[in-house]
Image (tube, rainbow, N blue to C red; front, side, top):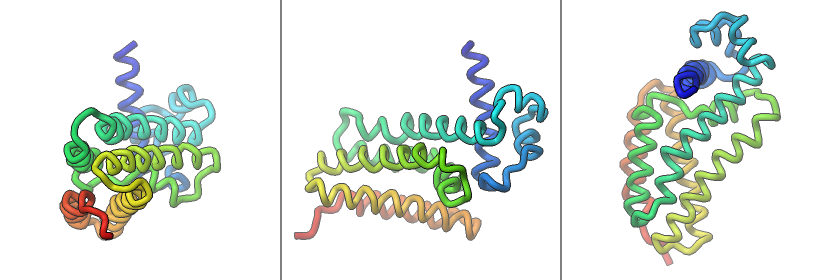
Length: 189
């Protein structure tokens, strides 16, 4: 069973890359088939509802991986500063040093079925909420912590969008370096 899950995860990762690179609408069944290594018939066997079901499975996997790699470390028992530093390192790894676009961001900006929107929203809000709690633990008032958490997510997503547009991961790398300092700054009175 574990081997079957590993194969499914690998297929989902390949499908995710197509959605991440091309968006939902442009991801053709032929392209998804080629990337997954499965025939179109096999894709329909595993995903009877077609591209929509594939995208949903990919979103669920992306949310699970992001939770494991970014959100759970924010909820650990380490100091707030250590949790933030770990989040930044894990973001760097998760987005392959800025080489990979954010799947949820790409899908949120493309014409996707409304069924995906609650899952995209949930993924982003979980991150904002976990970071807000960590910033409160750091000593920021809750309102300021929430605003800084939202600003952080905007900066990460914006940097990933810029990287995608100019094909240069430099802005993502600079943004993470700046965040390492700015995210923990005290709130101005």
